[in-house]
Amino acid sequence: MTERDSPTLRRAIRLPHATAMVVGTIVGASIFVQPSEITGQVPTITGVFAVWLISGALTLVGALVCAELASTFTESGGVYVYLREAYNPATGFLWGWAMFWSMHSGIIAAIAVVFARYTAYFLPLGDYGLKAVAIAAILVLSGINYVGVRSGSVLQSLFTLGKLLAIVLIIGFGFALGSRLPEHFVVDNAMAPASTFSGFLTALVAGLFAFGGWHMVTYSSEETVDPRRTIPAALLLGTIIVTLCYVAMNAVYMYVLPLSTVASSTRVAADAADVLIGFGGGATMSAIVMFSTFGALSGIVLAGPRVYYSMAKDGLLFRWVADVHPRFRTPHRAIVLQAVWSSVLVATGTFRVLFTRVIYTEWVFFGLMAIGLFLLRRRGDLTRGYSAWGYPILPIVFAVSSFAIVLNQIVTNTVESVGGLSLVLIGLPVYYLWARTGYVRGERT
Image (cartoon, rainbow, N blue to C red; front, side):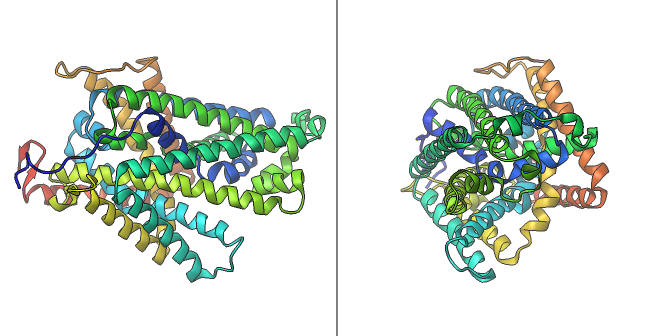
C-alpha cells in the first residue's frame, strides 16, 4: 500500500465535542482536593479568590496563544508541532519525549490511581486491587479510543455534561442548604496569618495545576472538523466555563466550611458534603469524584497518542507508531503504546517520582510556545485563522509567568527540580542519535 493509499484519520470532532474535551480534561479530581493546597498558602478569602481568578486568567491567555497557533497549523500534535515550527525538530522532540516518559503518561497513571482510590470507598481494595482497577480504567478507555475517535469524543462529552451537572447541583445545594454565610464570608483577614510572595506563587502553581490539560484539544487537529475555527472557539469557551465553575465551587466551600477547615482538609468536597447532607455525604462526593476523574482520564487518553503519531510521521519515533487503523481510522499503535507504558507506571508506582519531578517543566515549554508566537508571526509563508487577543502584551505576560513558575520551583525545590530538568534534557542526545539514523522533518542527517 502506498502512502497516498494509506488510511487517514477521520474528522469527527465538532465544537461541542472539542469544548467538552477542554472542560472534561481540565476538571478532574483537583477541584475536589486542590482548594486546600491554595488556602493553606494564602489563608484569606480575598487571597484565595485572587489565586483562582489569576490562574484562570493565565490559563485563558495561554489558550489565546494556543488558539492562534492551532488556527495556523492544523496537523495533529499541538504543542509538539508549534515548538517544531517555531524553533526546530529537537525542541518539539523534547516535548514529546517528556510527554511519553513522564508528563502525559504520568498524569494518566496518577489520575487512574485517584479513580481507584475513590473506588476503594465502596470496595475493599488492597494495594494490588488499587493497581488493578487503575490499569483496568486505562485499558478500557484506551480500547474505546482504539475503535474510533468519535466513540471516544462522545464518551468524553457525556462525562463532561455529567460533571457540569454535578458541579451545578453542588453549587446550588451548597448555597441553598448552607446557612453560615456571616461566619465564613465576613471574616477578619487581619487575624489570618500573613501570606508571602513565595507562598502566593506556590498557591498559583497549585491553581494552575488544577487548570492543567487545557492545551490537549490541539493534539487532535486532524480529527477535528474545521480545526482553524473549532479549536480556538473550544479553547476559549472551555477555559471560561472551567474558571466560572472553579470560582463558584470555592465560594461554596468557604460558604459551608470555616476557612481553617478548607485549608487543612484533605478531601474538602467530601467534608462540605458531610456538613450539607450529613451521613452519606462522603459517599456521594466519592462517587462524583470517581465520575469526574474517569471523564478527565478519557480525554487525556484520547489526546496523547496524536502527538506520538505526529512525531512518528516526522521520523522521530518508529514509523509503525504512525500507522492508522484501516477500519477504525485511529492511530491504534500509538494508543496501545501509551496504554502499555502508563500501565507499567501504575504497576511499578514509579509515576509518582517521574510525575512530581517533571510536571512543572511543561511550563518551560509553554513559555517557549508563547515566545514562538512572535517568531512565527515574522514568517511570511503562514496564514492564521485567528489572531490572539491582547498581542503582544498578553503573550509576554504569559511567557514571563511561565518562566517565573519554573524559577520558583527551582528555588524552592532545587534538588527535585534539577532531577526533573535532567530527565527532560536526556532527550537531546537521544534526538541526535535518532536523527543520524534517517529522515527528520525536511532535513537529511
